[in-house]
Image (cartoon, rainbow, N blue to C red; front, top):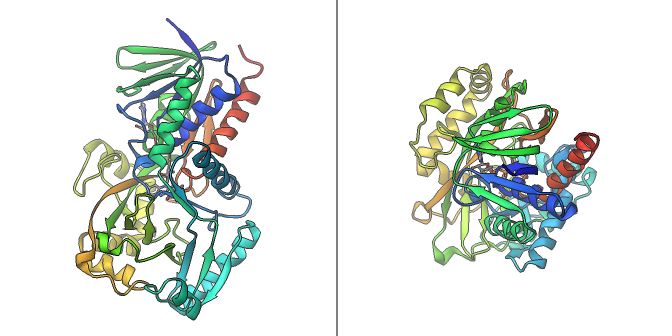
Length: 402
Ligand SMILES: Cc1cc2nc3c(=O)[nH]c(=O)nc-3n(C[C@H](O)[C@H](O)[C@H](O)COP(=O)(O)OP(=O)(O)OC[C@H]3O[C@@H](n4cnc5c(N)ncnc54)[C@H](O)[C@@H]3O)c2cc1C
């Protein structure tokens, strides 16, 4: 049986970027990439807003703040180098009332700390820049851009294969056994032997960590992000990304208007608790996922702590006029007929036993493995720096081992 030097589990952008970075740094090492689906970017990476975030929101000094800023620059140069679609259209964070205006000023201070370039614009300038958007003022972030993360991921896979990386798709990892000199990865009856392992399992991150008996204090909760798409005649309704000012206590960014690289405009995403980790339809339910969730103490704390906003999200998810109202706050000309169906995405959010959401990227390890446990937005933007971080860690950790 072939034994690989490194094996990656997870064919989303984080796992694929890490496989590629490893192969680029160490061309002579054998590297395998395992993905349970038959194609790459099938989950979070292929169901997102396509935004290359500049890094506005994140706690200064956090991994998110650090990786997002560097990631935005690296993602843009990857797109330029490989002729993938991107556009640096910038974004406007629009304040529609005095509370949001104060929060906008706080965000502006955060941007200074995170060294993100912004301009404050008033109501008149806002009208000039975006005639269809209304507000008391806005924070302009010129660095924000858009791309297609599925295409980036597929390009990375091509480069990985061209560098003689090995890809194994189409069956899930079902168990993992770590021994003193190697790790055995089981995909049903099939086995992969590897000296070291890096796991980037997204919505399954906690289960993959538990397969290796890592004593984790969180579980992954799925939060659906539901979108609509605007009809063709509204494709030029905005030239920039338009975001509401977020509530600082909630990590999700609010329903935004996003020009996509294919020329369409999406609206969304909201954040509704999901009952199936990888179920994209509105009424998908998995008994296993739901039972695991409701038996965990973190779940009930999350429900208690977010009951009002949770109910509001659920109502607006099922009641289109409620959803529309959120957008009309800053884009009043949109009507119910403008909200056309568009596929949802599902966020993997690590939640601790006390119900607190893990805001930053989170990692865990065993003797021979590294695990990405929490990689929510902006992890697509940050994938290349996350891959560098994992490769540095792997280098330090495994240097002295056989
Ligand atoms: C609605 C939404 C909007 C978002 N918008 C943005 C945005 O605009 N910009 C941004 O930067 N980020 C955004 N994000 C976040 C971003 O998409 C994710 O943080 C990022 O894609 C995470 O990548 P990943 O590789 O960790 O996870 P994933 O893309 O989920 O990949 C994990 C992979 O692991 C595989 N896997 C899991 N278990 C197993 C197993 N047992 N065996 C084999 N394979 C397995 C899965 O099949 C999957 O392909 C958004 C996310 C969502 C859901």
